[in-house]
Amino acid sequence: MSEEIRSNSPEEELSAEDINILKKIRIDKLEELKSQGKNPFEITSYDVTAHNADAKSEYEAFEADCRADAGEDEEKLKELLEAGRKTVSIAGRIMSWRDMGKANFIDLRDKTDRIQVYVRMNDIGKDEFAEFKKWDIGDIVGVEGFVFRTRRGEVSVHATKITMLSKSLLPLPEKWHGLKDQDTRYRQRYTDLICNPEVKDTFIKRSKIISSIRRYLDSQGFMEVETPMLVANAGGAAARPFETHYNALNEDVKLRISLELYLKRLIVGGLERVYEIGRVFRNEGVDARHNPEFTLMELYQAYTDYNGMMKLTEDMFRYLAQEVCGTTKITYGELEIDFGKPFEKMTMVEAVRKYSGADFSEVKTDEEARRLADEYHVEYEPRHNKGDILNLFFEQFAEEHLLQPTFITDHPVEISPLTKRKPENPDYVERFELFINTWEMCNAYSELNDPIDQRERFIAQEEMFKQGDEEANRIDEDFLRALEIGMPPTGGIGYGIDRLVMLLTNSPAIRDVLLFPTMKTLDK
Image 1 (cartoon, rainbow, N blue to C red):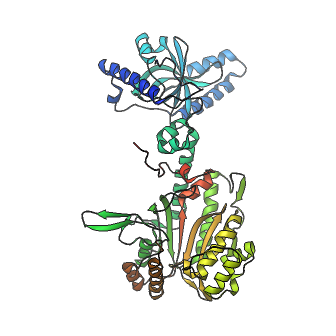
Image 2: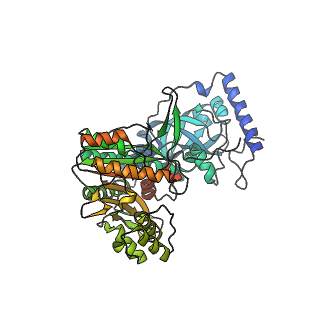
């Protein structure tokens, strides 16, 4: 098989045998370059003076100035453009190739954009052109030349010198359809980024979201910190941890499932406003909104409560939409979400009553809750109490209706082991979750700072663990010791960054916003 045809057939994908043949051809080309003392992998740097997008925009601005000076005089315009030619040095990957004999056009793509490069034998030399003609789509090259506009109106670079910087040994997916297979896209993100430029835009926006969060919190007086990933006790959330062994200490440890308990220790230590953006790990399944390792942002602020956290959350989400999307009205699928309006607010009991008709305000015992569940055909387990059953009602009847930003407040104490009780109704706690597009976007509390109450909650969680709840919290004696030292009234929030990126980039699945999502290993 020859690589004279520089793209795959649009009708069919290359077979494994074809790919192996093409790889052998490319390796032979590499060996020929090495034999001539032109091994591209020995090149250590290249002086890039402009990125493609900048080269194009700067030329267009220069061209507009020349046109303004020349008026209707086309000859004068030509003279001005030639006199002011700007030489650039660009670099990128060859993505397509049009061979027209002694003149070739290639498309070169860098991190900013693609640009057409005109390569002519008379400009780069006969021997150099003959060598250039042996190169392949996928090769990474450097180009020196001047920027101009072709007769067809495309801003391009007229090459005066071209250098191979890295040899591609495997062909890219065929240019007509790009890389479409989802499984391959996620496993080979490097190829996905090359073939699908819009994917790169998603991850650029992800980076902007995270930097905007940092900028906002820094402006509010918060300090970014780092806490341990390997812990003896993985607490702070209802999740099953991953376990590993620390050889040096000969101890079993866990990967953290939350950032909460260490950040609260820092509040005890007097730091007052802290946050962390970091990876957490939960031994759970994978679906459109869950990945076992994901990025979490948690913050804690002394001397405030969940009402203060509600205001901060609403302000931050509005700020992020404006910063990242340029508007407080965004579109996810066919839904328009308005961050500019005040967020709706209702208690969990109110939401269940609104969307199911069941009224938990009069439910006082576990038996009453179970009878109500039987009446509404809500499935529950024998260990579930009235707080658990209220939450099951909420998940079954209410969540699907929460499209616009909505705070669901005042959760039952049974499902909130780290949260301060409501003084006027101790069966419920000062907690909210923000829902958007039916998704839980964040979780926030008036943090429990009573060490006696906290110990009792941990003991109740231990009992749930003994009954088979692998996601129950375990007693953390060092955290209890910190609370006994004394923690001020504190508000805290946890945001799942990946789900937030999905929302602000209109991405259908969490794997679309993770550069390297968790995938099952392929059989070798």
